[in-house]
Length: 337
Image 1 (cartoon, rainbow, N blue to C red):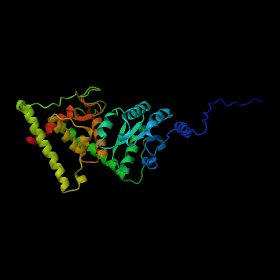
Image 2 (cartoon, one colour):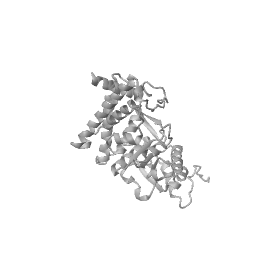
Image 3 (cartoon, helix red, strand yellow):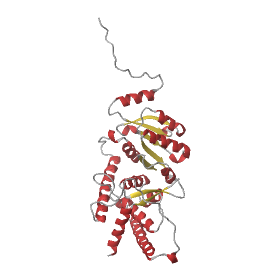
């Protein structure tokens, strides 16, 4: 009687104690497995992952061992860094490099004071969710957004505050896109995505050249510079008027961070002044985490551009794209008529 032999490859037998490795194998072996989260920081600061479907906490490790731990994992989907401002520059750079190698999403928590330094160390190509003095609802939104897109699904969690914020953000993105299209007076505003892919008015990979922010002596200013100064003064006056409303009404009643940031960047361009990430967050007049989400949305749409500080590689500036600047100029010209 012939003996039946099972020729199927057996799963590797892991030694006792490697709980994380066995869990990673099981997760990768099952289709639709939850996203694996590696948390960098103390256990007390770890997010409540149980409230977000499709996410599983693998481990919480200190920053010094985090890069090596991430590279040793069989599979990693999300890296969460808490207290990024307290991590040494070399350690943080190695951790970001490991995240880029593993192509995992990043959730980065920091303070507003350290935001410029931390943001400059994170490449634009890394899918990042920023948190600045965030509340629990904002942390849940960031964690849900950091999940791999292939794993995203709709889950009704009784329409809590986090889901309501996502809905409002999507509505605001659609509204500001329509506004910019109307300002441009044409189907596609230069600097915005084409329906079929790519950016209208720009070749792939093109970035605005580094601008000269030096100020000329006022006595030698040409007529064009004088007009720019007058226009910048009018824009700043408009921003002050918008802030004055908050003395008489609730600030969130008129929350319009995209327009506030457009006004601030347009005035700064007229003044030949750079705008840092933290400065733009303040100009948005909303919580910094919300402002950062808007900056990312506007940058992805080609309306904002990231520019390196030529004097300090640890900082980046945000500027208007040429197409958005042209639309703002036409808007204010229409107001003057």
